Length: 639
Image (cartoon, rainbow, N blue to C red; front, side, top):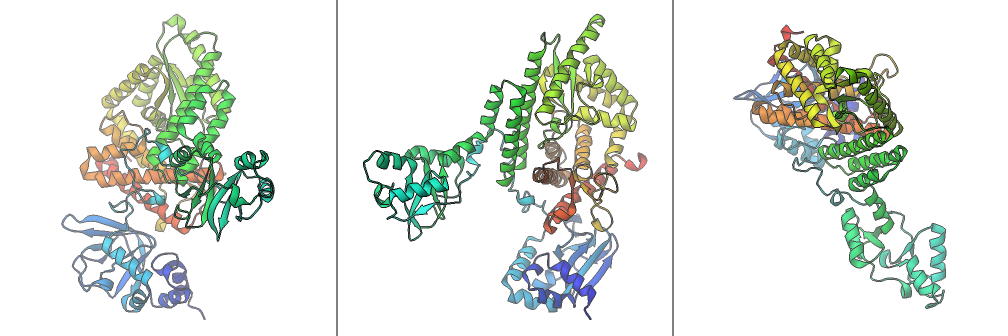
């Protein structure tokens, strides 16, 4: 009879290194010798300077904190699938750190004597253990791992939207190479090119490229009568063929074609004629790629004459976004570029809507982007959140002025809908009279929210900490911002309610760190990555940055990076939060593009084991961050 427990252990271990490097049979044999250990929260597994155990450990459920004196600071937190306590396997010395259950935890204890032969015989196992032991960390937010979530390269914060993205973008090339031999006739070549619908054919000998023939060659050499149609390829081909490595950027390809005055490049394994061809790159491929870059899209937006012409440009923006994600371009840079393109679309819609109005605006006004667009975090096609604030006017002009801006807002909201922004279900749009007010009216509204801080009022006030000016007068919006901050300082009770709202954000995980799924409704059994992962970080960043009276930064990741500067003692946590947020935003964006939706609700069964683990690692910071806020603002007296 099979040992059911050991088989369950084996099924778990096979998904994680170094056990994934072993044969299934070996994993099953090993699992029969493994002990299962339960630890309550804060229970010590081993202490600093303890004599080594006869096992090392794998976290099955829960989490384990690794700490070290003198400050007893957390060096790392190990969660599902992580290994720790390798010292007895690789060094005959006492433990140099403490391992303590960070929450209720189940461990697998792997006997050293049983496992050691596998480590000695299997090089991949041995190398993994040595690397893990040497780094002393599996924390994706530690210095050596930072920025590697979801394959991210380390993000250089010096990068900005002025970076020449064409130098970063690899060009897409055709992998379907059409070839012929050196003795193939021109007539046969013309037939092949016609059937395959290609403009060039590669001449190969012993699988290596020796020349190329294009439709231009056939026109200039055969159609003109200079050579008969029976002429062999090696006579009319361009040789030697110009080759490059397949990892070319758009700029490099463009420069190469201009330099040699050619329309096709042959891409080989090592970039020389001495290795097999892997692709053909045409001038058309380069032009298509050039058409999908921000500068070209911005120019195209400025040329449109009708709002409906903006929609295909928005589609190209989504293609650009997908390309950036595929190329692993840093999330900070992606957000800035897509936000600039979104802003350009909104500005164009507003200007075209103004052109529909019989008269120009009677007074200065500001069109405000709210929510994720206001924070420069709206990467996908989601619904629109916006508002209008306009200059105060005399009593006798109030009605006509408001009617003007409501009519303008109706045009703009309709235009935004036409180019892909859904209407806000809560009608939080400028065409709603509640969101189209004069400066004085907005001040009265905000004052009401701040001095009557119920749940609804707090949620509505959040909007005006995150907005950005899409179009119009910055003087008006700046005056409104100043007013908001002054009133918050004068009403500290409101700030307490902000803190309370932040701490009530739903947790992403529950018992044994399992994902908390929606319990009912349309998205039952789905994971809400917006409400349970992104919003807790967004809300916390807002509260903390407001406590420092910083009002010039609305982006969540940038807020955490500023907090890291302002509070050096919490620098590591805040930077972890910044990277967590960007990783989660990237994950949501990828899911949204994959399923052609907002990416908010995720079917967990569609995720790989590794994707789930990486998601959970980003959740660690949420709990630590909320604990920091709770202690700092004495939340026990609030909730």
